[in-house]
Length: 273
Image (tube, rainbow, N blue to C red; front, top):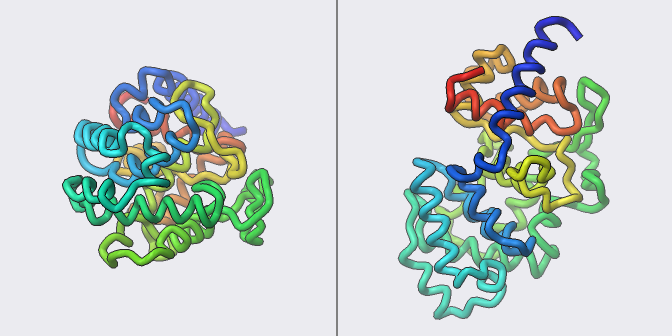
């Protein structure tokens, strides 16, 4: 390990230690799924919270709690059993360009995923366990850790989620890495569900996708700090940038690289390395 690598690892580890604490969730949308003890409640409301996670964080959190109220504070039960009349109450919801029409389709898409594939996590997977999705899309990282192609898994989930008839406009609310999208919101959701609850931040609810396979949720903060630290050279915030930054972070922790998303975000917001 050269001096620069050691310095960067120490900086990122320190930032993770400072920011990955229970207080992190106070001002973060992850507080919403954190409020539910049942896995199915947490993962369903977590998916919808991540879906609307763009814009001001205060507004995201407020609207995510509005979703909880619309679902009678029982997200999974509502998604699985809501009647046509109960679905009609969703029409008044709006968050930026995500409206009641989109929300209705998302509820029905989640219902389809549970009934057809057994759950949200399962809809990302083709088969197998422990991060091996059976797709043949695994590769080996620079440090020798087998890594499953997350873009393939996201594309698989997206295809399955949109199998029910839906408005064309609704499709834009689940990213498609194959078209270059950085898929920030779905990568953030996967971080929430997959990373261990080691610091009372992420939830660690899923076990069939490994932390090693996660991709960094690239936003303006992580991208800027990544470039300032020399971890990211690509100027566009697209999927290739996600791959480049995640590959760099795997050099510091090949088993859990995306824990450094919290470090990069914290440095970007606080301005402190």
